[in-house]
Amino acid sequence: MTRPPSLIPPQVQNAAYGHELAPVLSAMTRAGDGLLDFWSNRGSLEVAEKRAGDFVSAADRQTEDMLRDALCRPGDHWLGEETHSPRPPAQDGARVWIVDPLDGTTNFLRGIGHWAISVALQVDGVRVLGVIHDPLRRETFYAVRGAGAFLNGVPIRAAATPRLQDALFGTGIPFGQMAHIDDHTIEIARLMPLCAGVRRMGAAALDLAYVACGRLDGFWERRLQPWDIAAGLVLAQEAGVRVEALDRAEMPEATGTVLAACAPLFDPFAAVLRGAHSG
Image 1 (spheres, rainbow, N blue to C red):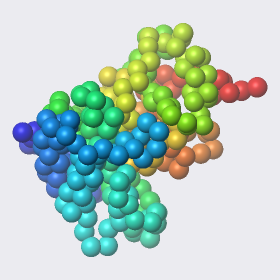
Image 2 (image 1 turned 180 degrees about the vertical axis):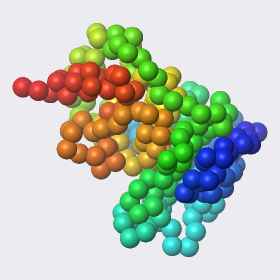
Image 3 (image 1 turned 90 degrees about the vertical axis):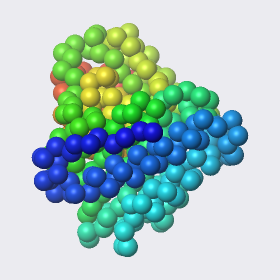
Image 4 (image 1 turned 45 degrees about the vertical axis):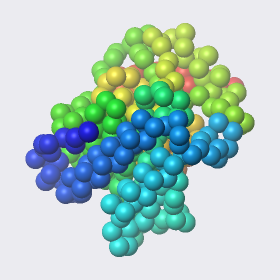
């Protein structure tokens, strides 16, 4: 059985919305234990295909139902991957839970141990809390706005890698009939000769958490959904990661296109990817 961090640092407890963290950690721990049971019996799971290469299972649906029952208060809005209401309002004090019950479903179904639960809370249009829980590794990444980012209660910060040639990046490669496959191929071809490597691990939430704790120096992906990135963006920004969209005039949470990197590398990293489409 997985366990949530037993100690929430005082600066988190005392932050606005810090009181929301303990019940979220408890709910995600229970959800993670349920997913571990599904993981042990994944060969018998009912699976459906939402589109080419994009799967959903009973594990996704039941975990989201459990989290919704545990987290939602009267008046709260829900934006989850499998069950969501009409798009909730961004302003006027609205509380919105943005949830991916199983980020990395394909990994999960194939027995690849890289998947997680992602939960974020947005209040009045601002993401104020993000938690990413990896049950297999017993790692829980969390952040409350203004109070820093943590892994199992220990503070984390982005890497300080100074040179592009030493940097390790994560990405998500399009699949099936996605229209932006060619764009991504161009970006990878531009970046790979200039860095230490590019990883495609199949769970955007964990990729952003890994940038937040310095395992990766940066991450980029196109057309992600809000539940893919909401918690990871809170973590990344609280850990000192710089985040923008591919188009400087856009916001990652609006377009789903994310460029995230440690501060020393962001400008050269972004220049390579943006330059891949110039001229």
